[in-house]
Image (cartoon, rainbow, N blue to C red; front, top):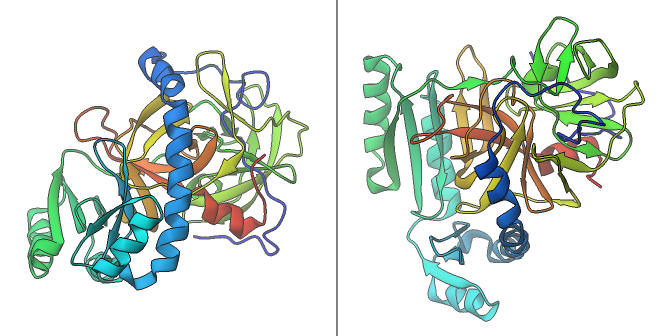
Length: 359
């Protein structure tokens, strides 16, 4: 069931801040110093990539139907895809690298929509702008008959679609983390503190509009005001408990990352996630505009996929690059390592829906 806040204004996102503010509960998983070091070491790279991604957003908007999106290549260089030589020249004049492809973003998105109608639980469909393809991922526990039907449907589009197998089951993360708790014992992670005294988290966490606490001792945070799930996966909590809300994300090494802006992620971009179960993990963006079928009628569109580790309890947690907020943890396949699939809700959509911003 999806609930919608009638005014959708003045909402906040509680990032996994320092333990002295919203993140009061002790972590339940071992620290990951390698990812913590990586987050610090790549911060400047992430800041630069985010700046370039914003420029790419403006450029692709100008190009309109003459582009299929942008991505970062293996060397970390921004590439803007185009459909003709004139558009390529425009891209090069802007200082970016151009690559001519055969399919527009609209064509690929049309395929995503069509195949999405045939989706079953534990499957996902999204765009890989680096290969100019739609990628269909089929979980290992999908019934053989359903998997075969989806593969057959994908084959009709030829090389425009790539089908991949996945070793795990996709699930939204509702239980498990350490950041925020409901009176019924469910646990999720906070996302980002935003203007107005509110907290953004995953919509499947706020579904049913539960009241939230910052620890198991019952220290109050406040009520859920809205849940947009399924379809989207974001929701909002009002801070009635007077909990300190610095505009930072906790890095799980005793330090915080100041969040000063928000943007949409690009394929190939270096990203990190802070969540209460797997703590700080980092990776890169692998797909955008992904439609995920979690089963039970819970289908979410417009998600971004990364290969950074995540698990139950990370739900609603912070996805970021440098000082820029990117998304809210939605779900994944519960695998950390080869084959990891983690999906996050782009935060810009949630910020715009509620009329708030990070600070």
